[in-house]
Image (cartoon, rainbow, N blue to C red; front, side, top):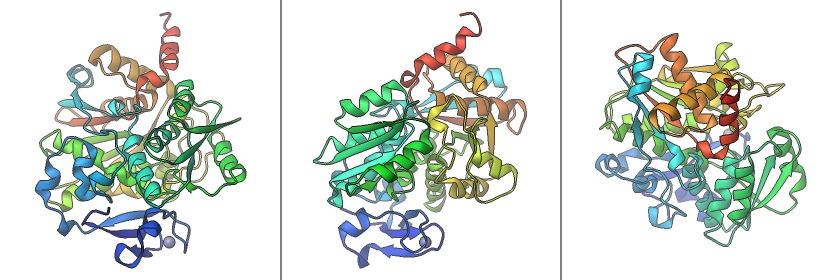
Length: 397
Ligand SMILES: [Zn+2]
């Protein structure tokens, strides 16, 4: 079940470890946050046990199971990953950059980058013999969780806020998942899950399980492999929970440690201005986030007022020499429309936030004429095409 290199779990705060050799399968696979201090736990690997050649090639995410907790043949999978890095020469020309590629995570099974993490997290919960998994989610995670539990005898319960897109709500049920639509915003859904779900369940929220952010590492391997291991000058990702930032930097760091690349590229995390607790902490020089009091962005997937991965995301960005920035909703929509209308790629709202971040990095610095950037589009535009279309209304279209 476990890969050779997976040695156990470590607490991201107090450092307490749970070694594979000291615990049974159910204990490891069903693990949540640190029992000592409550902080998230993360998988640890002995990279000396990994042959770099075994992870330098590979199409799908689980082809790199040497650096994941579980063997590919034990994974609940639907061929996630293997998404293309689409060349965007017209965007590069407009911004005066040497190159831009869009890592298009919309082409995952449920149209979201989160499939990489939920594939691993649901695999773990099933291995732990769970009967029920649950999470509170802006939408995509609930949909992805329901999709993977459908492969096995495992119930899933998504708690989503009313503002969650119709496509997410519909597809949770289509995949056979149960769902509670909670009036209000994501924080209300988080509270409702904690208060209302009476059955025993494994929480598959971001950082509630050690396996979800870890599964996102494969984005980093792929975006470097897509460039034949040439390190880009910028990797731009949207940030909500912080899990993608952490997962991507974990993956990039492993690629350095395995000798696949020489250095980390700067990672730029972009938040929507109306809900930017990670950016606010960054700008204040803090290492922890504080809850955002009045979250208000049209990008619901990133409207995470109290990000569970705030502190590790801040540390991850700092490690790479990148930065955390914010963009206005209108610019996120404008950038998504600009990419779709010139480069064919259908960028979702959260991906539009990253794209708008690229615009800002190119127009205001630090990116310039010699720089090549990779932007991660985390979700399909078809999850909320009405919001993108509405942006055109203001222009009389
Ligand atoms: Zn701890």
